[in-house]
Structure formats: structure tokens, C-alpha cells
Image (cartoon, rainbow, N blue to C red; front, top):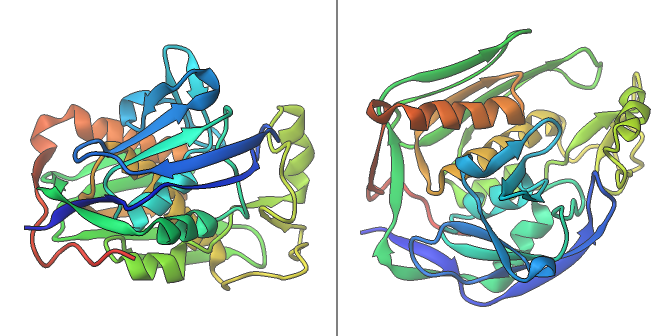
Amino acid sequence: MIKQTTLATSVETSGTGLHTAVPVRVSLLPAPPDTGYTFIRTDLGGFEITASVESVANCSYATTLMRTGVMLSTVEHLLSALRGASVDNAYIEVDNLELPIMDGSAREFTEMIERARIVEQPASRRALEVRERVTVEHEGGRRISIEPFDGYEIDCTINFAHPLIGAQRFLFDALDAESYRREIAQARTFGFTAEIEALRRMNLAQGGSLDNAVVLTEDSVLNPSGLRFRDEFVRHKILDIIGDLALVGMPLLGRVTAEKSGHLLHTALMAKLLRNDAAWKIVDMPVGVSCATV
């Protein structure tokens, strides 16, 4: 039997919200079996928001959750770190309305999890096994699908008309926690100088800087340190997919194929999958499929 996991101890960090520029402190705490991920707004008297598909309120430029009017935004990088490290259950305390962007990747969240250490729990790890192919398509060739597969694999393709990006493809085993830490967690979010002013007029990216995003001009990268990977852009898309699909509340068993996807497509796919009872089943995680934790 593969057992569920949580954190051995509490750990905290602080930073700034990417879109709101608000200062925020976040703490990760152990949680009982079958909790999944629960956010707790400590600035609102411990108000809880479950990380679930049903809680999604908006996903234009980040994934935002809401419960009875209370919102929490930019949750995808932290959820990606938890799922990528094979943590099943955690309470997440936050003292503002947006998660901190940190360096624009999930690296610092992954390091938090390593500091807290991961421990097994008595209950069996459950997984959502995909039994029928489900697809969501939007205009412009944007699409994402999930189909039956003996594991959890993500095949992601992006295509940007920029000399440093172009067409990039990456195939990733999303149950390999060590590979996640090494190949995905460090990949940063990215944006273009041509779009920054428009975003700020929309009250977005107020906290954005070269310290928390890869910023591209028409033909170069503004960041003095350059890129962490030649294909950092598609790796970050996979980071986002893992975080958004973590909203199902447990590991997935299926193969995801994404082309030019984003938060809206990711959450729409999970909503469409869950609406079709014949397309999925909750099972015990098969022995030999789930990889070791970080």
C-alpha cells in the first residue's frame, strides 16, 4: 500500500504578490489524511478555502479561488510545488489576498517543503484514474486533453513568435518528485515588455520585476542572469499545469497533452472531466506507479 503524506512540521516564508504587490506571509502546516490542500486566510479570522475545482473563480492571468466572496489569487505555483513533491495533505496559512510570487518559479516553495520534511500517514494514497479521453479546445489552436495512462504524464507544446521561444515541447513524468525539483520547479513565469503597461492599466503585474519573472524584449531577455534553461518557458507551462490540475484534490493517473494552453484551459479541463462520471474513478494509487517523495 502506498500511503498518503503530509509535512513533518510547520514552515513559513514571506514575499510580495505578483499582481497586487501586497506583502504576504505564507505558512505550510501538517494536515490529517484526506484533507487535501486547504488555504486559511489568517487575516480574516481563519477563513478556509479548499483548493478544489469548485472553488475556481477566475483564471485569466493567474488561478484565483473564492468561497462566499472571499478570494485568494495566484495559488498555482504553491499547489504545483506540493503536488510535484508528492505531498497529499497540507494546511496553507496566508495573511493576504494573494500568494507571494517569490522568484516567479516554485523553487522556494519546494525548498520550504524540503525544510519541513515529508512524512507518511496511515491512510492509503488515493488517485483519480482517467478512464475516458476528455478534451477542451479554444480558438487559436489552444487545446488540452487528458486520456487513460498508466502513470501521470504531461506532453506540453508552446509556440510564441519570439526568437528566444518559438516552438518548444517538453514531455514530463509528473509523478517523479526528484525530476520535478530538478527540471520543473526552477522554471520562472515570463512576460513581454510590450504587454507590461497594458497589464498595469488593468491593475495586474503591480509587483512584477526582474526578480520574479523572465522579461523579454522583442529580441532578448532583460534579466542579467539570463535563462535557467534554454526551454524554461515550456517548463514553466508544465509547472502551471501541475498546479492547476492539483485542484482535483489528489494525484492523477492519466496523460495530459497541452498545446498553447493556459490557466483557463487547465481548469476547464478538470471541470469537464469531473462532470462526466464515466470518465474517471477514484482508486488506490497502484504500487510501482507513484515515485518517491523529495
